[in-house]
Amino acid sequence: MIAFLSTLPRRQLSLGGIALLLAILLIVRWIANWGLVTIHAKDQPLSKVIASIARQGGVRIETSLDPTKLVTMEVVKVTLATALETLAEASDASWRVVYLAAPTKPSLNEAIISLNGTGKIDNWTTSYYPGPGGGWGAEYGQVIDPRSLAITMEGTDPELGKLLDEAAQKSGVMTSLPKEWCPLAKLPKPQKSMSAHEAVSTLVSSAHGKMAEFFFLSERRRRGWGGGGPGEGEGGPDGPNGSSGVGGPRPPEWGTQPSSIPPASNDNHGRDDSRPRANPDWLEQRQLAQIKKLPSDQQVQAQKDRAERKAFFDSLKGLPPAERMAKIQEMMANSEMGQKIQDARLLQDAKQSAERRITRAVNYLNRKAAAKASQ
Image (cartoon, rainbow, N blue to C red; front, side):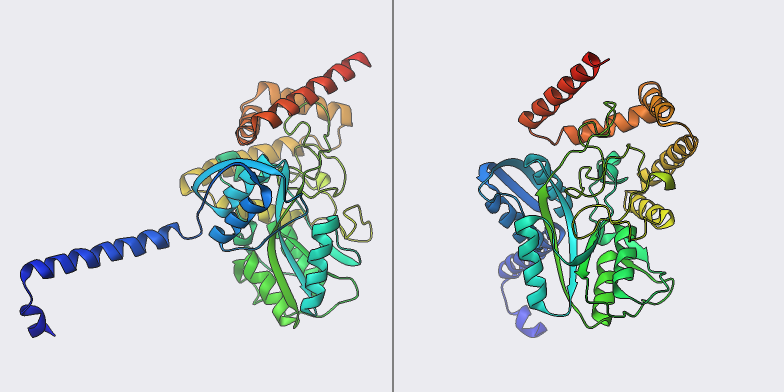
């Protein structure tokens, strides 16, 4: 081989070397950009935009929205989660990661059809614990894919439904399975940390079930908690990544203290008092996992902000609702912590369309005027 190369002209060898180098650079660039999403959409049907994001991100996306709805969005080489967040803002929607588990594939297909048509799955048990404001990543300009969060399973009950509920709490994904299907699953090796995707896949596989994983885009329902603070008009369990119709209103400090933790959603997207409320330790683990997904230079500040916020909301425990709200409003208006929360809100608003920002502002002014008139 060496003798053969020695017989080739030097110019030909040089050109061949350059061509090989360019090929290597193209491959490296392709690998570096794999999974990143670029969308240039001006009044395009939602179905077309979703198809493009799904193709570039290598994922499945389902929706209960009108596929003919026109969407305008512009993103260049962003992560899949960022693209979905931008699309959700552009279409006045919310998104989540969904894992359906069932004994057969036809059962999964029927559930997906139901979810797309009505936004719910009858006779299935659903666990979904949406957090406020997209989690800790949102405040630092990051949109975190809940599939990637590292979790450690610790449940002692081998029933698949209960283990999936734990995974949902620790990551923020939505899990659902038929009510009459109660198989036993094998708990992953104790103290072994794995991604939420790997954990759910392992659990379902060990129960000899079938699984469907997809992103779900649905209508955003506002359940404002009142007071005109952060998330005004979008408070309650929905939040930027929330579930349509899950639970009831709650103030913006959700996730920082046990007393404000909502129950799991059920198959009817409402309160299910027969199911346990969220485990505050597991939700705290989710917050810490979100912080670990931030760039290293942001993690220290995020830990400090989290500790400060937790201390503040712990100090509100036991106070009458009116006094609690007054202290929250004072914090929002006169503290660095409040300014950071408002800055995060502004960052979210910047992703919204101009039309939606105007509508939101008008609705807020109308509510404020109505509240003042009733005094």
